[in-house]
Image (cartoon, rainbow, N blue to C red; front, side):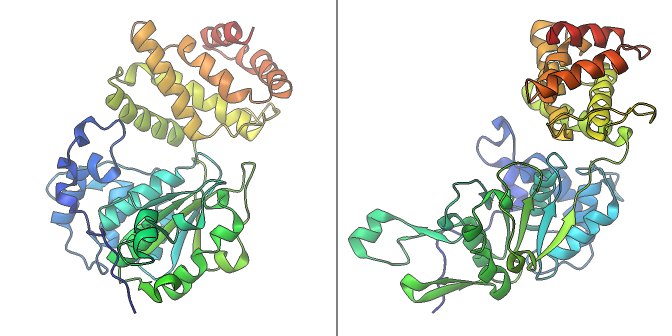
Length: 381
């Protein structure tokens, strides 16, 4: 017996941007924020598409990496990095292998996952957020207990998980922070990924995945509290490792783009006047992260934090808000200094010593950084 899962109608990508309240959303879903680009790609895309895909693999890669269409439409890059990584990820989703995006914190795993789902299925919301408390029901299914007590196990009492809905509709499901989920709950995915079936023993039934279904998971092995994936589960994924930005210019570009997007939603000043401060934040993060100055001459101690690109985006966005509400709207050294201190000094004892040593031996002696040095000293004192 195969169960038809209730409430799994697909979302029409062409109308997703017109849903109520979309314009007022603090962070619109990718399929809403970039609806015009997705529509333009769909109109120009004449290549073969896998079953139930909204775009061809070529168009999905173009959506993530950016480009210009024949009609002049500019597709903004969503991911700045090696093209082959995106091509391998997209190709994986076109097969029956699930995709695992692996990398240290701040390498855009969630960002890439969301945009892949938006481009492939037109819906990035079939999401399971992994935490230490994620139950098995979040991946399999739950029950409406009022219906369950009144009528016993039935199709109407079943509450499908995002993964079950994706299986029934041939969509792309997402599991964020897979290694945060307890190991026994992680292994719930094994049958789903190997057999493409989700048994429902209470009903003597099952949900079989239809063509188009696949799953994207993200994970990192850097943070504390990580639950290693079992060998059986890991074999069912094709793993793509997302690296940190290769060059300072790449990282500055990423931070500038994301800060501009966030700033528009928060009605903050434009970024261009603060590009120099963005470069300084990126330089500090990269040098402390790598344990050596950019010129390779001075070795440094690395603090306990990850100092990721995502944290750099947060520092610059906070600084921009300070400049807008308590300054003249121009991002300056004093606006980012406190944010950098908070990102670097996670361990008040050891990290503070590392930060002060970096300020005195590197920042103080660097040409053109006197204002940055003074601002950092003021918040550190």
